[in-house]
Image (cartoon, rainbow over all chains, first blue to last red; front, top):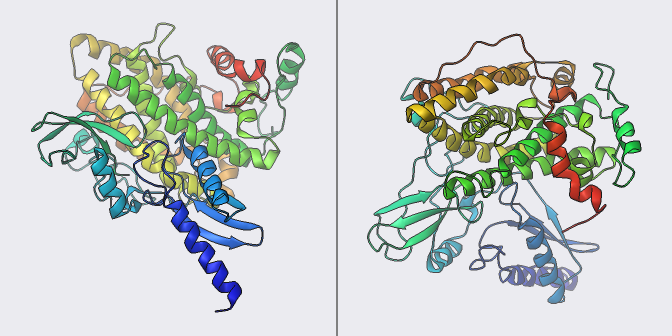
Amino acid sequence: MTAREHAASTRLTRAWEVLHGVPDPEVPAISVTDLGIVRDVVERADGLEVVVTPTYSGCPATEVIEQSIAAAINDAGLGPARVTQRRAPAWTTDWITPEGREKLRAYGIAPPGACASDSPSEGRTRGLASSPSGGSDGRSEGAVHRIRLMARDVACPRCGSAQTERLSAFGSTACKSLYRCLACREPFEHFKPI
Amino acid sequence: MTTTFAPLPTTASASNAAASTTTGSIVFEPTPRQQYLMRIGDSCLIHAQRLAEWSGHAPILEEDIALTNLALDLVGQARALLTHVGRQVGFDEDQLAFLRAERDFLNFTIAELPGRRAGRDFADAVLRNFLLAAWMNVLWAKLVQSGDAEVAAIAGKAVKESRYHVAHAADWVVRLGDGSDESARRMRQAVDRLWPYTAELFETDAVDTAAAEAGLGPVRAALRVGWQAIVEPVFADAGLQLPATGAFRSTGSRGVHSEHMGYLLAEMQTLQRSFPGGVW
């Protein structure tokens, strides 16, 4: 490795460290790297390019996140930084790191369960188109119940009880729903798998 | 606009001349492929505007939050598509959303019908949300394979969001349709009011054909089977009859809108037209 390559590699390593400290504006307990939205950091002729995949189409935090990332890189003396968007493949909660999930739980938000590529958001929505070939598997069984929003089994982030109930499929941000623990009676938010 | 139909290309400039104290409308002539994407993006945007009208007015707090959450997703999908089209024609998403004249919006008429006012009620909002979400779900799933990589990427995200839109809306269709006599009566009325506008969602025209030939996306008629597979079982569970399709055809996707569209745009566009270039 040449000295120049070594410097570049150090710069990238430091950039990832800096990004690990950039909080998500709506869930500040976790960083943008915990959330899994930073897909790449690339050394370019004109500075560092940080590639970000947006969470939800309408997430109002997207612009703030991009500004925070650029500011953090620049403040650390690693700039100039440029943030670009990569839409495909679409972000999934499966990209939230184990560390991120633990931070969410400690913050009082039940982390999302695993979400296979065509498994539904927030419960069973089987029967709906999820891929070019999907959506035709099932008029053979149980009609509408296949596409009703079924609450998942979500453990209480405070007492760990599995005895919980969903209060609302939607919450304060696009990524969360509202639950209540039937054991400790505390309400809590659940990060929806998508 | 193209010569495949006549969506009155002079209207935007006419409106421009009339608007002496506010910002005039942008004018451009979208290609059929751009029109195809504008129909989807505009339908997302206008549907979102109608959903957002429930903010502070939904029957229960949870639904207030739900409808505005769905609206947020739809605005995001509209932004992505309008930004994509805008790059090709030299305008940004805000200009496309807030500075186009009524005739240059290509959303399906069903998206612009009142959901809360003018004699409509929550049943209309619930049903329209379901019918459109189901249509979008089938469309996005096909657009994942679009030859336009940006459209395919937008669809890859949107199809996941449309799944819970459909599920949430279907839940309410059944809850009201299979609920009390009063809620069932209102749902039936909503079906009678809205169903005639669903025909437009499946009427293939020259824009669709051009898009299909270019590998951009499917013709509208290709969405019917998938849509019915979602809608029919939900109607059955809700105890609602599927009406026959009559002769009426709405024409929003050709830029010829209902009497409700002007009021919607006046409200949606007033800030940007009064304070040109205003940003957050």
